[in-house]
Length: 563
Image 1 (tube, rainbow, N blue to C red):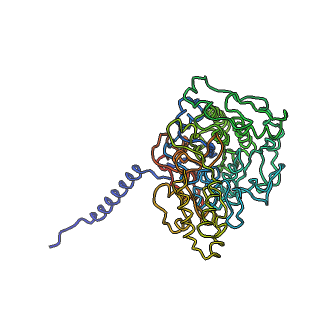
Image 2 (spheres, rainbow, N blue to C red; image 1 turned 90 degrees about the vertical axis):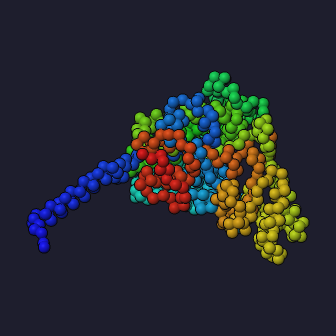
Image 3 (cartoon, one colour; image 1 turned 135 degrees about the horizontal axis):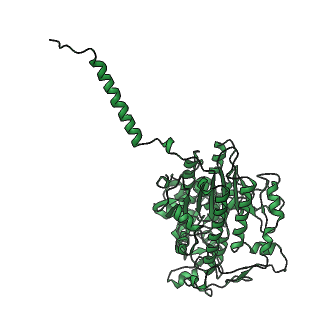
């Protein structure tokens, strides 16, 4: 028997269902607001700073002595990673700078050193040399850095310009040509310090002549104001009590290793000798920041009339020169970092007034770290030595010739890369792998060498799976790198002499660098212990700028820092 159903009941049921759905949708929207609604506007300026040769341990060791506006501002108001690394096995300036805005490793981006052996010509080449271009108004040698031609991928700046129809401006400034060129990418503009004139100049790769603001800056000759001036200690003497003794390392001939450090030339005139001397100490960094400020004003960076973001890269080179000469344990390195801290504070204050730091994202990192000098390490009961690489290679060449009865099986080297003469090997009826293995076995018997990887191992993936092996594989480029790569013991490095130190290894003192990101509207301040890499910078900034990552980028977006 069919029951009588009120005619309005189906309509009431439909209405109830609709109300339930709408209430659920409203609740879900309130519980999870849309990403689009929450996303802040793009920054007006992205400032990417690289302090050449700054190990993270120095930033932590001296942080209590920093002022309020420089490194401390970044540490307190930004995201600070304690376990960030240049995660490749050959830690030098060109490779480290390439990683910052490509997000790529050398096996992809093609920059395998500052210098390396061209596998075709067997001659040494420089990472940014390009004889098709010259410096503007400056003497140019064939080996001088003038273009990013050898960089095989694009950068964040290139992607930003692509996304904005070339309306975004990308400018990079450095005390070293490679520091500027490898940050500027393919479509930005690089300016670098000229150590014969003390000017900052670009090359004809970027333009035919300098814009008026550069000419006006050069006319002021700011580099001359330091002649006869001294670099003196910034802090009270007690602040340096923990630094290494100044008597530990002998100064290089014609130099000294103490403060005050006076800048002059042997001729008694302002000349190329004086301009070259400026590189070791705080005045080069001050000139670099001064020129960066001129670029902000001359190019109107951060105030782009098209309403799109601009990017400014600033590579500060002097800390690398100081650490090479005196070591990161020295009073000079300690004081230089304190002076750089105050320079950063002034620069940030300037940007605050001109653009507003709430409109700026700042990233600060380093291209590599630094070991202590062998002399200092030995006082800490650490096995540390310098290795005469040329002497070792001469012995290797003789060993291979004696073993196989064929002359010149060793072709060339730019350590840690070693090139064999495969043509000679093939012509003599030898097996390539057999010669590689013989060379590797010999090298592993040499004092200070702990690993030797062959081309066959690297191409086949047969190298071991340790972290060091992973970093060395990333540093090896199939087309450009050698047929063997060697790794020294910790705290040993290739070099001669009786003072100073150098970097380039896969060990933590060379790979662990600062990674600081500050941007009030985009970044959550905090001290982050998560593992991070310098190659994470480009994808993270691409995410903030709403542009695609650079073509070779392998890093991750540091989502834990994002608001």
